[in-house]
Image 1 (tube, rainbow, N blue to C red):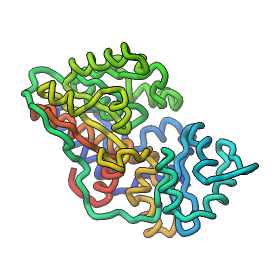
Image 2: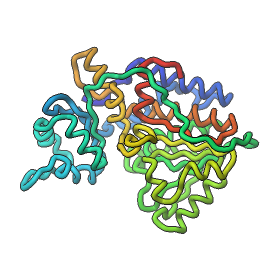
Image 3: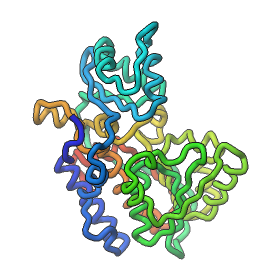
Image 4: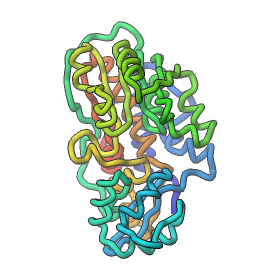
Length: 342
């Protein structure tokens, strides 16, 4: 099953993060809404919801598998090392279920991660409390002298929610999209996309060209905060190195949201909101309590991480910046499940 209400500990964690952000910026951001409301906002607007993530039995356990794109389904034959007629159509979960039951979890996870698939061991219970926020690099600080200008390179939910909160707190936000690969959230609920992005300036850049990449560098040079939500290698492959730009630009706050953090090998693992929460132990904890294997919430790692990222980024900017903040979807859910204060 999918789309159950958020765990009460996660709702409370979301409320604490939003309350802390409102206190920090001294404004009643998104009045009338709680953190828990933000966890359920997409599902409330789109009853059909996304259905790309499933919990499926393996030969020795249960895996969480998220296949949101056509290209993910096209990788399945290579992942399972199929031959001949065993080629799956997009959405053929029944056939996939039978094929996964032949292989052990460790094999499925290892092969999947090498191919860039979001697959995780669902049986791992939440671990010890962890630091949801890590500082990956420090450069020169500079006290802020204006409301922050944000260059938002993120897409989907976690990053756009973060910059939505900053916008409501008084920031100027420039939403940057690639002409070849615009924000995938545009393909979902139009009203949800509007709520996340209304009021932001938009810049559509040809990032596959040298000129487009230089335009991006110029935007970053004028920024106080940079927000990205892709695997770290994505920008590095374009020659945009966060650490170098922080060193060259006193006061720059750079916030990177990823599935599992910036350290190797986790930096190369792909993740989305549902599978990151499963990896953090949410479904296993739910199974331990109820005896049922279910996906809890709607891509719940995304809004939880967006709320915490907004708090961390605003605090770093107010403290003078010069930091590369590393925030991971999986770590954020694990932190909230542990009941730690935000």
